[in-house]
Image (tube, rainbow, N blue to C red; front, top):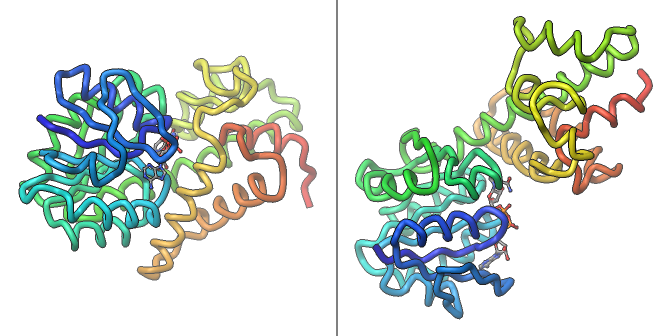
Length: 286
Ligand code: NAD
């Protein structure tokens, strides 16, 4: 299959490489001039789209996605499928689908490690026809793909998931900081909570306390991982969507404010989102 791939950054570079390794003819483009071994280089987004059976994008945000879509759509062959894997607002995903009906919004979970290993989870929105074309490529780049519904449903699933993740990470960090002040050993707290009703992915799989639970960014000085500013981006998308449909999300709103303070008012930028723990440990109750 001829695949155009736009956005060869931390995630997209690995994903494009995996498609090429699987035998597809991949032509990539990134404004930063990034080159990926095994991937032919185009000189523009439109050139990467020309003659493609499938076009994949992995871009920073919805505004950039819309700009790239406007550039590539006139160049796409009639039956080409447009798969956007970026995390963007639901409206941008639907706007692309309105301009190019054979499209899938397919944000991912699994991070840079998952992109490298080809073990991402894809949550997809779009027609059954478009999903069917995209599915074999999801199988190469990931281990699971869920067709969530019509256009925008993939982005909706992604921001709901990450709103839960942001809020549970904060409260897990709060629990460790509280345990410290109560004189409860962190390891004991982990042993109890990880097998009790307070367990969560944040605690069990990504423990924010160094030296406890499985290896996580906490064991690497809170280097990301999943950077706090990316969590803030996703939380803001959740609040933008909640605002648009009038949904009450008080904890999601609060989690957004906490990450905004951490990233924009303190030293959270560039740190893993689990660095909420050292932040909270230093804070006094007000
Ligand atoms: P990144 O910044 O490393 O990569 C984005 C790439 O897009 C950059 O290389 C940039 O040069 C390129 N780009 C920007 N504008 C462009 C344009 N107009 N034309 C062509 N290329 C352009 O970001 P990333 O970490 O790879 O994330 C990509 C997307 O995946 C984001 O939407 C992010 O929220 C999402 N995501 C990231 C992770 C993660 O752990 N990094 C996990 C899940 C989802």
